[in-house]
Image 1 (cartoon, helix red, strand yellow):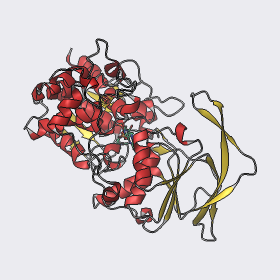
Image 2 (cartoon, protein in one colour):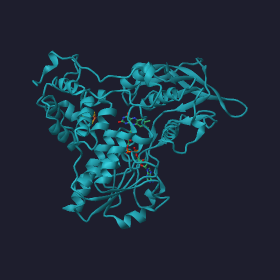
Image 3 (cartoon, protein in one colour):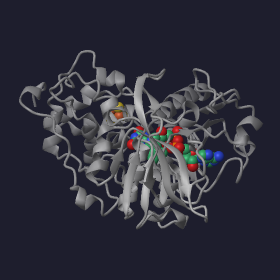
Image 4 (cartoon, helix red, strand yellow):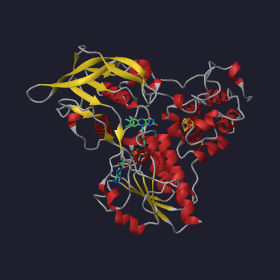
Length: 462
Ligand SMILES: Cc1cc2nc3c(=O)[nH]c(=O)nc-3n(C[C@H](O)[C@H](O)[C@H](O)COP(=O)(O)OP(=O)(O)OC[C@H]3O[C@@H](n4cnc5c(N)ncnc54)[C@H](O)[C@@H]3O)c2cc1C
Ligand code: SF4
């Protein structure tokens, strides 16, 4: 098919299930494009000489090339190109905030409507899998062995590129399943858990040994793995929840977003979970306005909470998360209160939450981060009834003791220090993903895993 079809064809999004139907389960809400939709949408691409989408994608995917291939029905070529630079395109295609990345910088994002890059990326792999295509690995062809601590996207990406170089990988994770936050954080309505499990299985088939329920520093020591491997990659994420430092914040039924989401996911996996996180019939208030807050709202709705409200201190135009996720949460019935900052948690005599005291805010000049500042309006206090309060205010690295004990230094935010080769202050030990850069995205974690693998391969095989 001819390219540059944007004059004749409008941007379309994949079909989305009706909100009344989708709140009944945790299944993904978007369909995958049909062959015709993907080919037509790809044919809208301008084929820019210096593609901004490619530069803005953290993995520097060869986007215009695979768009041209899929438009011309060269599905196998598109699959190979897409899977070369990206360790799991069908995952990033589903959950990257494309409006801030590739699609945000698409030349057509000027009124014509950006190419639906993420949805086409998902289609290319899903269609390929249906036709029997699989990621290719050579088998273990070297005598080198690398340990990876943490099976999130950074660890899985690193494993992918090491295995492609014929290096044996031992992967350790303290959870019951691999995937990190892709498995125990991001809800199934955004990313089907089987999609992650399928990639993990292929890595195991390719020669990765997966050791789950194994926490380094607790179940086995760092020395145990150091003595048995030629290099180590640390990708332990950043799961320490940030608190608001409010009166009564340790009351019963005040939860951190990650604890809530992880426990609900464990319940859905039929694993042991803490029943205090059941929200059925409760008034749930979520504090925060990012994507994690949207995930907590939408999870609470599916868990049959009585009411689900988001309290956010800026206005809706200054929300930090993706517009798509905000729209989905609203469609599903979440209520929003803007320009509201928490002051105090109100409890009863049993130290249980009954409400949250809020204050109105006004936006002021932009702060150092470029976002509108927030000023409290004096005497504007108001109460919001709540049985459960969930804080979704971001995450920081947690610096487990094995780091300092082994001379692995962290910066003042707890992020692991690395040089330009992703090597930590201990020789032969590398790090990447959220534990190094602070909480960010699947695609940035995947990119650091991929880049670190390149450096490890160079040091072990050259
Ligand atoms: C609710 C939520 C929703 C999100 N939604 C999106 C989204 O839509 N799109 C997006 O791009 N990003 C999203 N993110 C961010 C994204 O999930 C993270 O940036 C990404 O997962 C970080 O990858 P990572 O590999 O560095 O760490 P993680 O995914 O956190 O994985 C770290 C792994 O290390 C393991 N581990 C930790 N310590 C040890 C130890 N001592 N021994 C063994 N194992 C250990 C943990 O169990 C975990 O499995 C979301 C995050 C959250 C919390
Ligand atoms: S990985 Fe993310 S940023 Fe890169 S092309 Fe895919 S959806 Fe866009």
